[in-house]
Image (cartoon, rainbow, N blue to C red; front, side, top):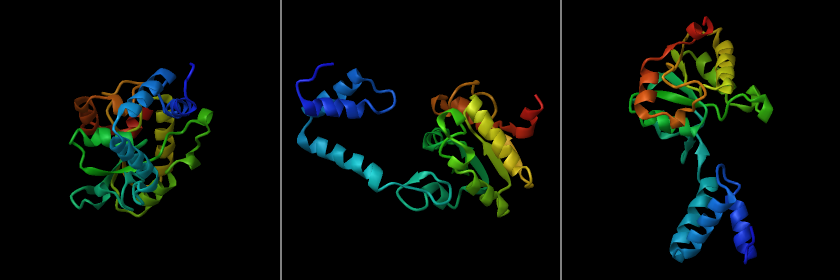
Length: 205
């Protein structure tokens, strides 16, 4: 792809580093920005910078937040005895959009994937174990993607939490094997949470 400007070329290369964005799509983004009013571009520039400077990870659940503790963890109406374990922020959004889950979350920050160099120590698993050891939590819901990596991560957590007297559930398989939570429709995902099943029953199949 030939460019008439080095600045355009560099901007296209920068956008093309985003997941799912090819060079042609990146060029469309750049050309659209060029057409926009300067104030609009300044607002976008400021917001992009704020994504790196003003956002934090909740000290309790590791969700993305503008405060040290996220709004979900601060909400007194949420059930602190039930924790839904998810891969990342996108899954929190997907489940929240169902309006059917009233507990709290624990964001792992990924799933175990040796091929990608992601080991259990790379994830927020020990903080989950510490949370359970405090004795307040009565149920953990494993809501990880129905992929080999997701199942591996769920089993690892199951083994880590086995010594504790808590209920360990998994979302019902309304989510097809290989699917990711963020792409599930709200009705299906909501039913999968509501109709969750004991995790150890999956181990017997």
